[in-house]
Image (tube, rainbow, N blue to C red; front, top):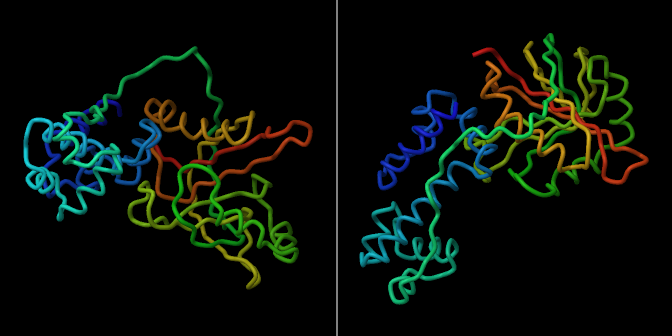
Amino acid sequence: MLNELNRVIDYIEEHLTDEELSLEIISEYAGVSDYHFRKIFFYLSGMTLSDYIKNRKLSEASMDLLHGEKVTDVAFKYGYQSMDGFTRAFKKWCGLLPSEVIKNGISKSFPKLSFIITVKGGINMEFRIENKPVFNLVGVSKRVPMQFEGINNEIVKLAESITNEQREEMHSLQNIEPYEIVNASYEADADFLKEEGDLTHLIGVLTTENQISDLLEKVPVEAHTWAVFPNEGPFPSTLQETYAKIYSEWLPSSGYEVIKAPAFSFTKMDKHKKDYAYSEVWTPIRKK
């Protein structure tokens, strides 16, 4: 996968000024699904693919300005439809106006990425593979804004909205592992890993029952194979690191790829250790 990522980086460099450069075309060039590629890119690089492209375009634009090109020519060269749009984006990116870059001869840069393999400390990553039959995710759900970092206040509000009646019914329906309250995300907007738009977040349980009341939502899940990653440590940093390692370390050498199905996790806070928890990440996969 690292070879594919580096080929994509080269492709982006060659087409930074193309009007046709789109996230979908880039993912197709990588030879994997759009969903899968963007997820890998984010967890390896720490940024979305669209943010990387934007940063590279503005970095190259700053170099062009330093080399004496006109602001108008640079703006349109990198796909901005108006001078105002380019000026706002450029000022937000580097803290300077394009005219100030030309006048003072200073700016900042954002170098091209390069993905390499780094071997760290020989730390084992615990996982197990499980096959699950058809089941339902049952619980309360809502559309929430896409958010990569920090606390998503809309998810907090969703958790706080659960009534005693809903909680009791969820527990009565729960009959398949893991026997925990889970957090599942699915039905993301088209740009799944662009921090824009919404996704559906569900807090609930797994069940094979089909009869539920109107108090709860039901999401059918097909039979799949799941990679399960237990983790224990300071929360939420350990859970976030586990997600990163799944995509940066485990997937590239596992012989599996992520499929488009609801992924979920659960967390059990330790009553005796502050901000310490046991979690499991359940990732739907298939063999390549």
